[in-house]
Image (cartoon, rainbow, N blue to C red; front, side, top):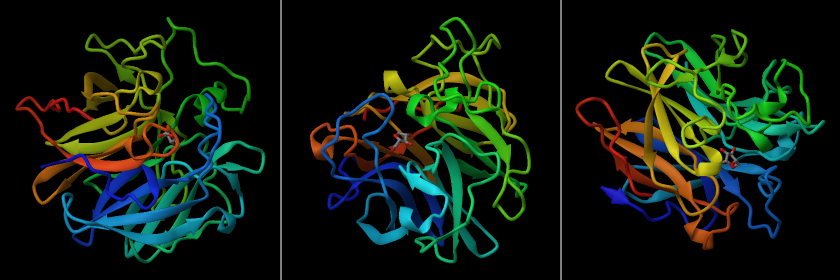
Length: 320
Ligand code: FUB
């Protein structure tokens, strides 16, 4: 199955985090606004204010938009820019994780709770303590432990935390220095806080050396996703300015992750962001591009296509 059509065309959508809940595919995307704004490297063009949850009976079937599930004005700590979300389920409750800028303009990660996969969700009064940057991905391991992977460069501010304190004008490391890594933390049993201090999910090359900051066709930029296939942990992500989706694998959810390559050709538009999910024995890649707006980077649309593993566990490269 290869469906290259937008899942929905009545709104712009991006950053799809797909999960199977209650035997149905639920997609948690960003909701891009139809704004005339100039693009810049700080991501000021991404001024999203709410989330709509989508669902499908099957990936090549029709898509339902369940309407607004959470709005910026409901979140006491947030000021603007509701970026890429994710969701999790535990003990009868659904959790929507989302980044937004706080009142000081610093990205934090919040959580909102509901009883249905499509919401509505009620936000916690404060962001997750010790959270920063963007693009949460919440992964449940087979032993029931939940992990959050997160972080994004430039407008996503990951480079602003070199010492654990926010430095607004901090730069990314020099090209020959180790690249910045996504962060990973265990979640508390109630899924509302970090149980551990966020640590680097280190990505190394086949020789075991940490990828260099200048290696921008391989190093991490944003949009982490974690899935497990045949007992191996797959950390996949966007390389940002080179517009690739890459992956690295490990025997532990905490890494280190060994770089394996890219698996999606660059999409139309600057950003590339995805999720990988199994449904009825097949694997699917949900991703976005900007075809619905003719290439405007902040007016994107979510798509899906089947993902295939080779016998050695590598992901067969796909055309966007
Ligand atoms: O949608 C806003 C930002 O663009 C996301 O948080 C990034 O992953 C990129 O897709």
